[in-house]
Image 1 (spheres, rainbow, N blue to C red):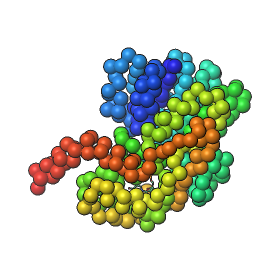
Image 2 (image 1 turned 180 degrees about the vertical axis):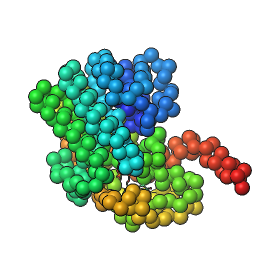
Image 3 (image 1 turned 90 degrees about the vertical axis):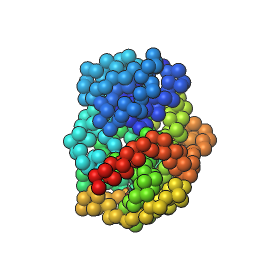
Length: 334
Ligand code: UDP
């Protein structure tokens, strides 16, 4: 197949590119490299089956042209991370709402199948220990919820074009996807804590660390995406994708500290100091994977220790030199 991936130079997108090229698809990527990176896709640039366009998805003509070339679209391009969204409000709203509406309409007009990436943030403050796809969205008032609302708008557009123009769509709600190439700059807890532990810096646990999350390795996500690509039962459906193995953030910090043999102290910081006084942090977020498993059959997700080990190996390989040069630079300035 010819497949377009918006945001294909990002953390998840670039892993999807690798997997689809491995499976002999022809892959087109559009990415403005705002939070993505050329380093994530550099190894594919010489591949004849890979085509990279550095452009913003707000460029309608380029987007339309790419969509018309492909049979399937994965729409990942989006502003990511709570911190990035709070710091870049206009850019985030534009990419999460305007661009999504635009590509969903193009897919409907051109009669292309589209997989739209949504988020566990959709459920907001719903504390259910097993979030199901039709559960309530409980959203607060502050700007912090704009990401959740933007993704909900994209989901509604899928539904609307599905109903009126028979758009063939699948919505994937990702739950804390982690793995190599994810950077901690935009909030993501696991790469942040791994980086801090490896540098023996204080490990920043927000509030009391009793927040519960599940962590899913990006390789599991892309495996599942490949299993559903041509499955017609997924048409016009919404799926949670995430493992149900939950862990509190303080336990996560302790696991990372133990695995890296780190000298770091674990520090507790009020999240409102980091994100502002009206910030709200969902206390618990655990998916029910029943619906996706009913389509793909049994699936065994990597567990948290395997995930941490894999991210640690990636950090050691990728940032070794950088950590050393920061250390040397600080010696010089003294
Ligand atoms: N968190 C933390 N320390 C950090 C970054 C995040 O304790 O340095 C917490 C954050 O408050 C949240 C959880 O870790 O409760 C997961 O945060 P992340 O930004 O990775 O994803 P979210 O689930 O909030 O989308």
